Structures are given as C-alpha cells and as structure tokens.
Image (cartoon, rainbow, N blue to C red; front, side):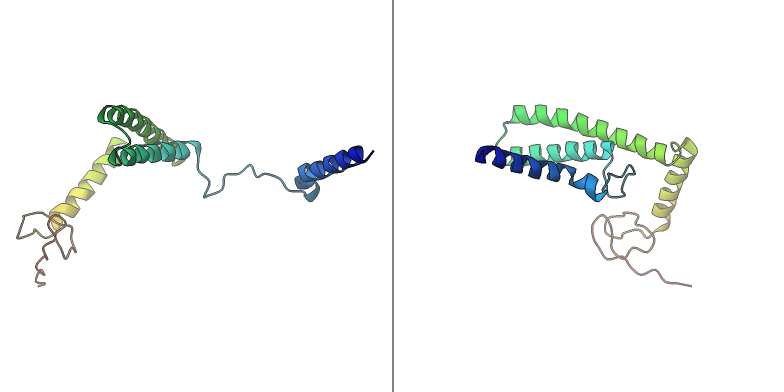
Length: 147
C-alpha cells in the first residue's frame, strides 16, 4: 500500500511539474527576439568556432600536419558556405542584393578616402583624411598647414 501511495505522489509531482507552464499561462513566443541567432548565424558561428579549435589543436601539437590540413580545408569550406548563406539571408531581409552600381559607388567612396589623405613621409602610404599616424608603419604624420 505504501509503495502505491509513494508512486502516486511521485506521479502527481511530475504531472504538476509538466503542467506548470499551462497552469501559469506561459507560452512560447513565435516572434524572433533581437538577440536570438538565426539558423544561418548559428551555422556560421559553429563553423568559425570549429575552425578556431582546429587551429588551437594544431598549435598545441594535438594534430599532425596531414590531419590539420584535411580538417582545415573541410571546415574552411563549411565556414565559407555558412558566411555566404548568412550574407544571402541578410540581403533578402534588407530588400535585395546590392547591384553593380552600389558596389561601384562603394569603391569610389573608398578611393576618395584614400586619395584625399596625407601621405606618409617614411613609407609613402596614403592614409585616410584626419589620420595622425601612418596606418602602415605607425610614423606620426606631419600636421598639414591650413590656409
């Protein structure tokens, strides 16, 4: 009799635990939260973390060259596929892919930034406008006189 009473008590506690969200009126949201990863973002993160772990294992001496090269090639392909899928998903969310005109405008903007800045006297690197130190060698850039 005591065994049956104990089993019934355990069953009742388990049922209450399972039904607790229903009793309290809790429900799962169907909307995606801002900090929640999408499938492509999660796939990208997993691939990049796996690639990092392979690098660490190789540097720690846990992998020989042959295994390292095989794993690196496989995981790099997987990471690139995940990055490509993530980029395609983002462009779909933003309303379409960037066209050639958008890319040309971005290239022109980057060139204008590079062409307009000061040139390093030590290495000749053309820096962005407003730079105080050379981005290539770290040499302080001369202040340009203002007219």
